[in-house]
Length: 203
Image (tube, rainbow, N blue to C red):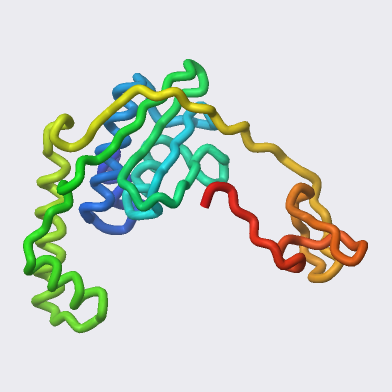
């Protein structure tokens, strides 16, 4: 019989590897779910607002069930390790802000990362880099909550639940687009791409 994966192992499996960034999102989410007294959502019961598009967002998806597809994962491009979680049933919400300096690394780790990212690292350097990456991840994972982040209750204006719209065929490219995302161009209905417009829902 296969042993069931822990939430952390599921996050690593989904993300593909262990790294400090994944730990940030994982730990922030665990703390928030505990604060709200909830577990993973089957549908849109929970809402997650992430203020970065880094590794930790993968852990948020795994642990909360909040995804782009369900419309309850909202991305705000602030470049901050801050995560807000809300429970639609109770109206409660918490904001988890990771404390600055948590990701502090030694100079060698930074140099190794630069080499690895540029493809110039030797096999030995790659191994050392990933070992350091793993060590930092473990250190962060086991930090006391009060050292890791600031948690505060907040008022959240919950986004509307996802809706299903009619599909309109673009007069130019022939592809289908959801009704609210089409525009009139030269008297014809066209998609945003053909209309020359970009659509953004918070990112």
